[in-house]
Image (cartoon, rainbow, N blue to C red; front, side, top):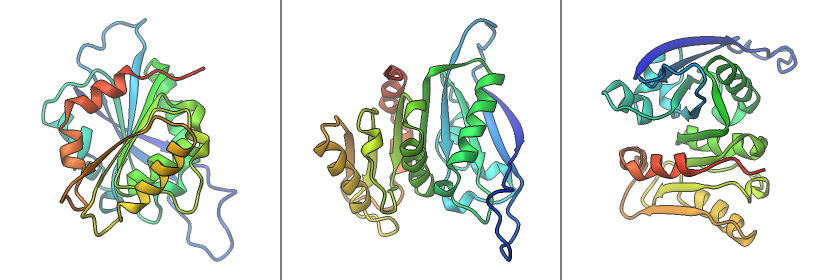
Length: 227
């Protein structure tokens, strides 16, 4: 896959309050494009990957430390456009749903993305961001795959019709597995057919096994946006 770098402005004028530090005004991102992307009429699926808290900052290479971008850098060929933004040091992904939605708009227009095949996945802080982004904009996605994340006191009812495959280790001491269990329980009570993989004896790193499993990508690519 071809690896490119991008940067997009962030309009935070309405979000800054007197006395608060000025947040980052740009969002950096990596983008991996399939090597056979040579048909100008072909629309591609898009996977948005959200990294964990340790990869925030200004060193964009950190955004590819784990997960799909790390695999792409190692030579793995994915059948989708992969976008991996880097969260500003002073922020969290679950605080950035509007920024991420704007990034998706920009990338989708530039790289001929199929609007019915847009997916989001993320680990730890990125798992929280995945849940939050999906609950804020459920109509945008075909499916989500949050890993060791959760929601802070929010309902997941808005994504009851969205295909979800969640992952968490039952020995996670950083983000308790109960945070995923609560969401899965709520969704199933609403009739959702949620997939939930519980890793026995696995701590916080439940992402390595998840992202190395080809079944995850096969499942994602099989989903289409409803309606």
